[in-house]
Image (tube, rainbow, N blue to C red; front, top):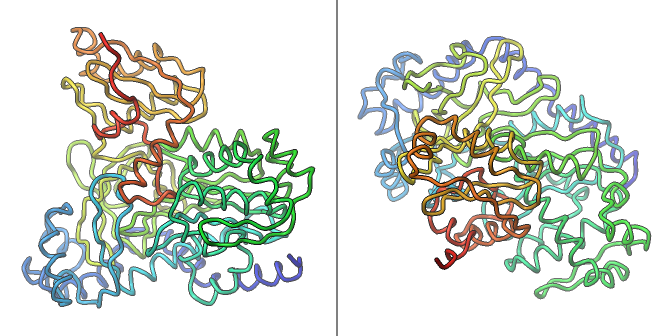
Length: 510
């Protein structure tokens, strides 16, 4: 791609997003004021909706009034209101018109239909614009402009990062994407992965990769290597047919195919400068493995983006994810059940996340846990720690995913690992050799009830099973439930019985 064109696009992006970036950074100076200003806007909406009237909310209420009048709510609490709003189209949870309903990714249970208003959609666009501005202003200096933004097969919803861009910028950037929009129409996972590998291997000038789960990219790399003999003729010819679709790329040089065959990804993509993916909580080992396989100037962790709302955005000079203080109202619940505002939290502490969104979810317990990992301009940085509701309890041990994730970091090498409940023990499922099940067992004994269960003989020691294919099987399981491939992130702890059974297979006889 012409370097002058890339420079012009980068300058246009930087200029278009600069006012929003400057305003956001000013608001980070005083998160208390920013959240109270946001609350005034939210209250004006809520007071005109049935839910607000039901709880006695008035248009002149402030943040303290809002918190005193509204209860903390789960999805089940809000479901009757959401159903009525969807059925009538009226001002039930929000007085703003609902443009569409976005299904959740489904990783934590049944899919939910989240109402999207123009204000909520603008919040997603704002989050992406802040991220893009930060990379252009403070990143490694892009020259080719070629990007892969994750695309998962399926219809509807946000299928790739580029769809978070405002319309004009999305049209401007579309020619820089190495994967065509038609790729997501390949519903068959094998055909999709073949076509994805075809486009990635053809992109010698690839400069940016943005995916959600690190395992998605790791599986794509492994698939490209495993299928290279089959894909090589199409890559040499620059043409591929898959499930009725024809894709064309520049023919791939023999030396790049040879580099792919030996797994030398730096030679396959010599221009690659940035990989962006989930890098905290259960995704930390997978992100570390990607950093080993793709040594680059920049590996950046994603912020916290839920289907229900954008929550944080990573900033290079912050050193972590900054909360979107002008888009989502954030409350943080400590282990004792006390709720804190952003300016009331403690560095290093973990909290359950409660959000109020511009889409009509009021004081909603979203199910995620975050950790305070520092401050930037007076605002605490919030790193995803894991799901608050991901708990395994075979005999009363009550292992939570954030704790298990921390234990895995100490007992397993970089790679993909998960702890799977299996009858009277846990199995450490690993994609490579080198994990230490005894060390993991000792680390898990840091949880009081696990230690008691082990001492009493209720649980046997952790077992180790090395299986390079388990991440792909998990992807297939969740894809069969309707989850998008790009949304699947291997958990540190498996809590769904059907997933545990499918990943481990039938128990050994005797």
